[in-house]
Length: 62
Ligand code: FES
Image (tube, rainbow, N blue to C red):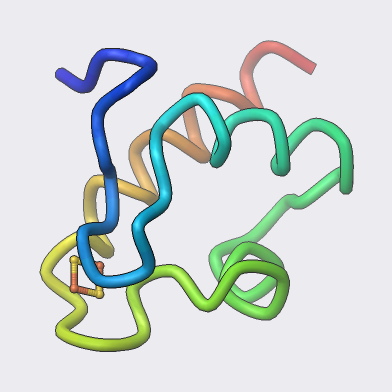
């Protein structure tokens, strides 16, 4: 479980709170949307599943 301040993606240096903000501000719906916008999970990919989980959680809130 990530805290808001934790880095979800250590390669792109994206914290959970910033990922969540971007998802809602830009209306991102899919992992492709998120990656196009942020380049998250495009280096080693080890954070992909975590990002996907956060995206799914956030989509339940809209
Ligand atoms: S930790 Fe996200 S691409 Fe490596």
